[in-house]
Length: 151
Image 1: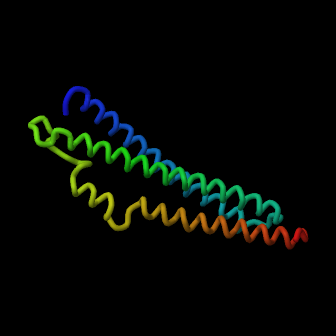
Image 2: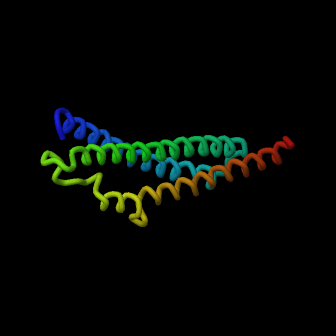
Image 3: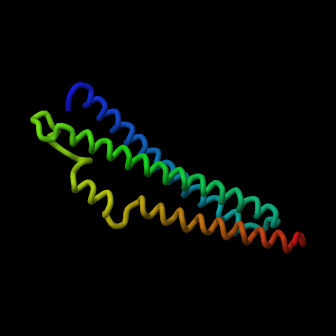
């Protein structure tokens, strides 16, 4: 690397690490949100209007957190690719990075084909819980309509 490239590499690595920390925070928030909100719908004897409101807000909140998690993962992949580009610069020269992490074939294999990863688990969990929230909202809408004879 030459000129300011090492500083740019360090800056992008810092952005990537910050995004990774934010991603873990998002996933923790997703789990906590669902852990608190789902029992409010399933375990209470609230009126159907309240349950419908909780389900609607739960679906919207879950969807927003899920989308932010997906977008965060895209940013992490973007930063990974840019760090790999920096490592490949001047690869044939003596000033090249002696250790390659993000441009290493091993990193790509681990990132893409590592079997069960937290990213895949949280994506599956997010889809399942999103379907649960959507079906609960539809169910509560039907209960609300039948209870209050809105149909």
